[in-house]
Image 1: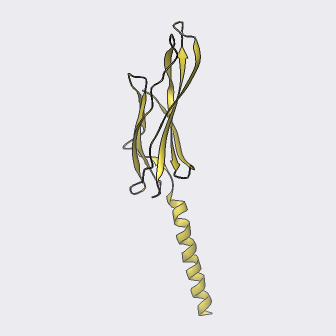
Image 2: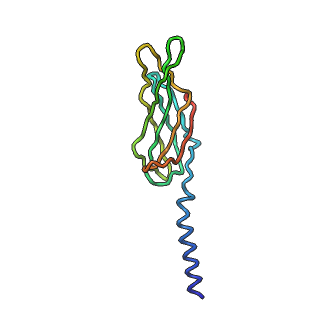
Image 3: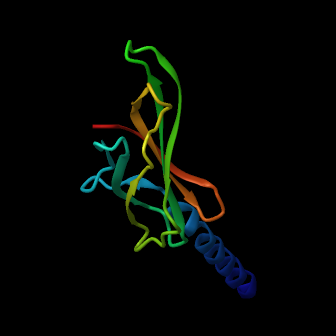
Length: 139
């Protein structure tokens, strides 16, 4: 009977330890270093901030921004997509800081780029699983 009790306790301990990584990974924006995105004079967008609750495995930060090409009369034509990707970042105590700048928005001659009002910041695992995403107003 005593052996069964010991086996039961050890089984429960193993189960509890196996559940810890699943409970620990709750990605969230760090409130004292929030995600901000800024439109730069050269028609690029820079996003920076901190995300915590990522565990200790490497991750990749990605910024996506849409833009259109406008005529002088403000008629818009299809534009494109601005993107920036980090290399793999290994979290420190489950947290990463990032600062990414997209390439410039460019249009054919005679058209002017109009960058969208929001950027989407996403954090992916090294294997490509989406861990966190947030849409941020561009200032």
